Length: 295
Image: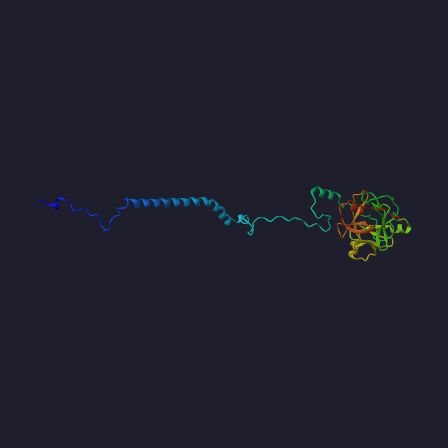
């Protein structure tokens, strides 16, 4: 009887060598597919993240620069320091003696004002004039009309009367201790309206005025009055007035030597020292003609 053992191989053992039985419920290689799919998804997620980061990078760059660049500080909002140059504040303060308006004039207005401002080119008083009372060799003669340009012809006669331009029938006249603008109808009024023009006590190129009794015209508290010379430096300055060319032909403006920019003018017929004003009224009130003495 043949040996069946040699003809038929022993049955195949279905277990693996480690002793566990493979799962026959799913097709072979499924695990590898899952691993490949997971790797693909991970790769896609990494690429998407990289794209997002690259898209956001240009927006973040200016912010980083703004945080490190001092020149950009202050441009993003309030509360940050600014390195910009400060704006100019030029409102030059006007000079206390200059007739400047509170607002800066235009170039044309400034030129017009300068053209109408009094000029310093005015004649000096006559060299023959003494600093005290008494008549000169020319006496009280001379023309009774207006002086020449700036009063140069009238100063040859030292005894003068000072006539208003806009009130030609009124003259400087000592009334009490003050000097006013009054008519000179009587003999006493004509005598009180006659003065001797002498070299300025504080400046020989300017004028001083003396009365017939030897007093001087000086300003005190900016009011013109007649007082005796006390010999002080202040009195000499208060009694000295420098002639300036007026906008009226043959007239002068008289500027204070110790208050430059202030001129003698009449207001309510009172002679006073007032700050220059670029107005037709001021120029008329401060314009005077030196004519021959009335007395």
